[in-house]
Picture 1 (cartoon, rainbow, N blue to C red):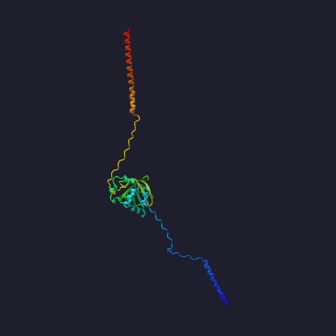
Picture 2: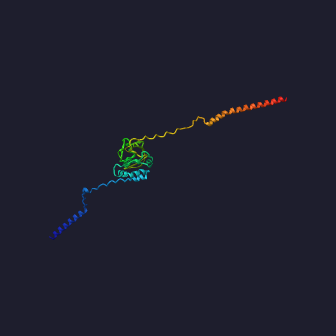
Length: 265
């Protein structure tokens, strides 16, 4: 009886030890992942903020255009289009000298709304690289931020972009900034829309005629040459008259001597 009890306890102890050893040696079961624990991709980085005031201040000089942007509050519209839309913006900026050269028509006679529309007329609600203007030249008038009535015509002439607003015909002289979503191009004239100034466009002044090429003829004798020629021709007549006068004087002298000699003898 005692022996059987010891045997049972021993068997129980062996089973317990073997189960503990098996549990310690076996790896833990993988945990089931719930659908909500799937890793999400990192968000795309936000585009870099473009400060139009800074770009126009360090380039140019574009101080006059920048002053109009700030006084008409159009700068806020441009800034929002540049940084808060997917299309971007393209701006045509006249230099300060272009505003100084603008005599007629004058911007001082415009109302606040007209002046605001004129500044909006210098931008398009989309980013265009210089290569894109080759396609725009075949599409006809392109609307600007001022509205569908304020449109521009483009011509790409061997890589040089020309703009035509009706009143203004100019070209892109340099690229100030051309990185998506903002393109800023320098132009030589202020863009004047027909929607403000009308269609009665004064004719362009004619180009100055080239100065005539006045060069002396190679074969034409000069006045000095003519004078020398006439004096040289007059010299023989003068010398011959002196000879005749001298010959007559000698004749008279000989006759006087001959007459005296006759009277003496």
